[in-house]
Structures are given as C-alpha cells and as structure tokens.
Length: 335
Image (cartoon, rainbow, N blue to C red; front, side):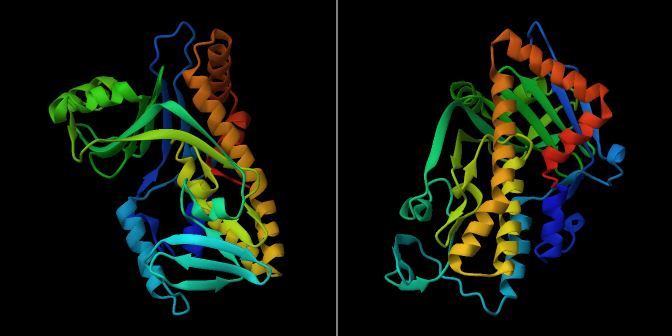
C-alpha cells in the first residue's frame, strides 16, 4: 500500500515500483454468500482520493531481488548465513550463539525471525497466538479476460476468495476456507481446480488456468504486548501475524522497519531506542490487528446480528464518502 511503497522508494529499496509491479487502482468487494442479510457490492477507486493507485502488487521474487541489490551496496553490513541457537542477555549487552559455532556480542538486537521467533522467546516477550480452522490456498492464475487494475474480493461464508492483478491476464489468488475444503480442492488436480476457480469467481473473468501449483497454509493470529524493550526490537511476524486480509501483513512489517529506522536515527541508549520503537509501533499494531481480526471474524460469523452489522457497515462505506475516506486511511496504513 502507498505509505509502505513511499518508504521503500525513500529508503532506496525499490527505486521504481512500476518497474517490478502492478498498480492497484481499485478494490472491489462482492458479497458472494447465500445469507439472509447480504452486503452490497462496494468499490474503492483510487481516483476518488486523487491518487494514481492505492498501492502496488510487487512479486516476491522481484521484491527480494531489489532488496538484495540494495543490500549489496551497503559496505558496513556483514551477512552470516546461519541460524540462532541462543540469545543471552547480560549487563553489558547481548551474546548471540550461532549454529555455525560463532559467538557475537551486540548492544542492540532486532528479531525478524518469524512466528516462532527465537529472539522473542529468549528476550522474554509475551506472545498470544490463536489458531483457526481455516487455511489459505495461494497460486497464480491465467484469466480469459484481464482483471485490469482491480483487486476483487469475493466474500464467502468461510472466507474471501481474492484475485489480485499481476499484469496482463495474470492474477494472484488467495482463497481462505476450511482446511478440509481446501485439501479436497487440491485433490481435484489442475483441471478440476481451474473449473472450481471459474465458479468461485462467478465466471466474471471467463476461463481460468493454473500457472503455478496451489499451496495451502494454516492460519493463525499472533500479537505481543510490546514490540520493543530492553534493547530488543521485534519486526514482521516475530511481532504480529493474522489472516491475509487486505494485504496487511507485509505492509505492517514494512511500517515496522520504517519506525525502526526512525528510532535508530533518533539515537540514545539501546534501552531508549527500543522503548522509542515500541511507542511508535503501539498504536498501529493495536489498530491494524483489531480491524483485521474484526473483519475476519465478522465474515465467518453465523450470528445474524453480526451479519447485519457487517452488511450495514458496507452500506455505510458505499454511501458515505467521509467514512469511506477514513476506512481507506486505516486500510492502507496512513498516519
């Protein structure tokens, strides 16, 4: 989304997003459930906010290549390809024992080591994790008709079926549903999946072709009480994780890095830097985590009043431009 892309450009990590990605100019939400109370189709258009795009769909491979090119130009950065065995906290700093036998001393530690973060565990951060019965199926698709610059979310009873433009007639699919449903879908094979995807997309884009294998990932949420303390800071999924709703995971992680950079530039003792980072991240982590969790659970809920509230909220977004602007600001991570 736009704030994260602006940071990537400013930091020199992605000099030109147009060179490696596709612009997201519209976000279209379609209620495909068969419930008694259904939400209206809702369209967010970047032109309404005087923006060329809400953000960019940047392929993982090309994004990693761009990051690597930036890393290669940093003469003061040493890279050691190994894993962390143990992190000890002492009066004089941190001792890191690596799997290759090396021992390093550090004044500051940044844990960017995922949901099962060894840094988070060793430094005594409290984490809360909750699993879901849903999982996510992801793959790349070829479409008979181009999707244009619109990300299309079909909301079904067990989760969204989302198509994101990937250039030309290509789209990235993220389908959230019950684990058993996705496993059964995988067993249909390539042709069976293509036919299923055509129906799930309501034949809106014509025939569908699988361009990559379909992979299934289990879903869970993770949060921490604070993202930094005592000279240790957590970024990315070491600090937060939730279902892939609205592309929030990567964007939140990039905002972590932006605030980490700002805290480091502000200076001070390791304890002061980690406290500064935690303060900068607190509001964004709480707000984004709450919104994503509420959106996901409201979509899954069988409780009629919750369904009515969700439908009413989407009607309000459709009819009230000021509310749509506020929702847009939250959705893309505007400060």
